Amino acid sequence: MENVNQEEPKIVVNEKEYLINDLSDEVKELVSLWDQARNMSINAKRQAAIHDLSVQSLSKMVEEKLENPEEE
Image: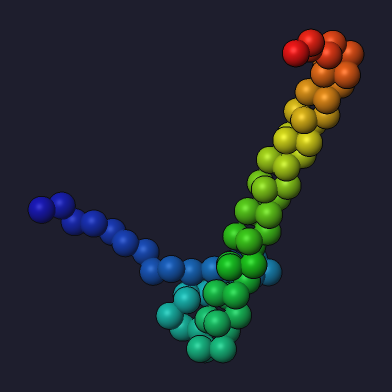
């Protein structure tokens, strides 16, 4: 079996490293909330990009239908 070197989780704030295990419960909760908010922000930006592409695509489809209406 190989010797696996696992580092303890840490964060860097103002160029100083802090081990997560050494933080108070209050700071751990704040870090958790920050991480959750960051992930939500990233997801919201992705969703906004998808919505923007959908709007552009649908706008193009409307323009094409108006310029070349299909006869039924």
